[in-house]
Length: 635
Image 1 (cartoon, helix red, strand yellow):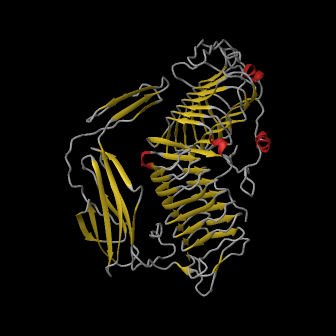
Image 2 (spheres, helix red, strand yellow; image 1 turned 135 degrees about the horizontal axis):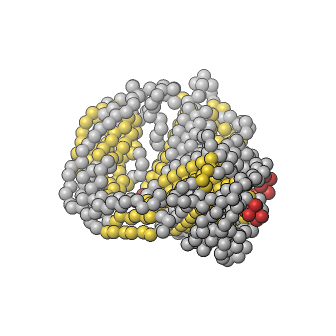
Image 3 (cartoon, one colour; image 1 turned 60 degrees about the vertical axis):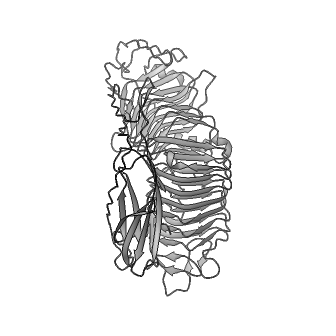
C-alpha cells in the first residue's frame, strides 16, 4: 500500500494532487506549475457598464484610482461589491477587466473592495510585471470549502493587504515570483485569514507582515526559499512551518511574531545552552549544537529542529496541530535525544524523523493523531524505546528506507495499522528477551510479524493486557506559569494503576492533600499564590504499597504590561503597572486587544485541591474498544 506523506501535498483543489514522490522528496516546481495550469480558468468578460470611479489615495504606494469603464467600483462607506472570481494572465488583463491604475509604481492597478464567493480560486494573477494591489477584499467559499483566496504565480511585484479570507485550502499563495528591482514590493500585510488549511504559503521571497491568522492547519508555510521577512504576525491555533531540505533555506528574518499570545521562538545557530520553551508559543530551531530544549507546551503549533547535532528535547507537550503540519519534526539532525515528550491529537502526523541519524526517542507518547504516529524515513541508527504509540489513524510506526534502527519495549496499540517496515535492517526487539507490547498480538504465535516489505519480526512480543506498575504523569509542561491575580490555573495529573489506594500532594515538601484514589485525571487548583516559585509533587499508592510520583513547578509572576495593537496604522501602546486593568475600544475591524488584569500584592492563600476523576480501568484490565482507556501515556 502506498504511504501518505507526513502532511498532505500543496493543492489547488480539495482533491489530492501528488507533490511528493514515494521516497518522500518534493517534485520539481516545473511539475507543480504544469499541474496547476490545469486549473486555470478562462478570463471572464467584464460586465459592460460605465461607472465613475472615486479618486482615492493610498498611503502605502501613493496609489491613485482613476476613472474607468468597468464593474469594479470603489468602496463607499466600508461596503463591498459582490464579484465573480478574477483571473489575470498578463499585464493587459488588468485594464481589459477594468481595474483602475496604469501598472506603474506610483499608479498600480487596484483590485479593491470586492466580495468573492467561490469553491475555486477567488483571485488569480500570473505572468505579470505590472505593479498591482489587492486591497480590502473578502474571499470565501461558495459552499463549504474553496481552493485559494489569492494565488500569485510568477508575478514581479504585488501587494495584498487588508483582506479577509476564510475557509480556503490556501488563503494566500505565492509561487515563483521575484521583483524586478529593489523598490518592487512583494508584500502580504494586515490580512485576516481564518479556517484555511494553510493561511499564507510562500514559495518565493516576500514580506509577510502584521497579518492575523487563526485556526488554520498551518498559519504560515515556507517552502524551499530564502530571504523572507516574516514579522509582527499574530497566529492563534496554528503556527509557522518551514519545509527545507538544506540549511540554506532557513535563512529568513523572523521577528516579532506571536503564537497563541506568546512569542514565536526562531532560534538559529545556538550552542551549548538550555532553552526554556515555556516562554514561547512555538519554537523552530536550526543549526543548533549541544542545545537542550525543555518545558514546551504548544497547542496547534508544531516544534521543528533541523540540521542540528547533539541536542536534547525533553518535557514537551504538542497537541492539536493541523493536517498540514507535523507536530514534532526533526530533519537532517543527528545524535539527539527526545525524552518525556507527549504528542497528542494532531490532525496530521505526530513525529517525523527525516534524514536523521542516531536519534533516541524514549519515555514519550504519540496518541490520537489522524495520520501516522511515528514516521522514520531516510534515517539511520535511531532508537525508539519505552514509548506509547496508540490510537493513530494511519500507521503507528512507519519505517521507510534507511535502517539500523532499534524499536523495543514500546506499547503499540489500536492504530489502524500498528507498524510497517520497509527499511533494510530494523530490529523490533533487543535481541535478548524484550520486544514490544502489541494490541493485535496473537499469544498462540511465538513471534509477531511486522507488516511491510522487510519481513521484520518481533521475537519477544507480548499482548497489552494490564498495567503492571502504578504510573502518574502530568499533562502539559513541567513548569506552569501564570500572572498573579488570574484564575483557572490547574495542574492535571493522570494516575494509571491496577489497584489504587490513595494519593498525597506536597507543596514545597509540605503535605497539603491526602485522599483515596481512583484511576483517571487528578486536577489540582493552584490559584491564589503570591509571586514566586513553588514545587508540587504528587505521590500515588496502590493497594500493595507500590508508589509512583511526579513533580510540577509553578511560577507566579507579577503583572507587568498590556499591549494593544490597532490596524492598519500599526500603532502599539504599552503600559506598565503592578496593579493594572486595561480596556480598549476597537476602532477598526483589525483591532487586536489583549487585556491583562492583575491584583498585585503578596497574599498567599492555600489553593483549593480539587480531585476530579474521569474514566476507570476496573481491576486494571484494558478492554479493546473501551470508551476511555489510560494507555495514552508515557512510561
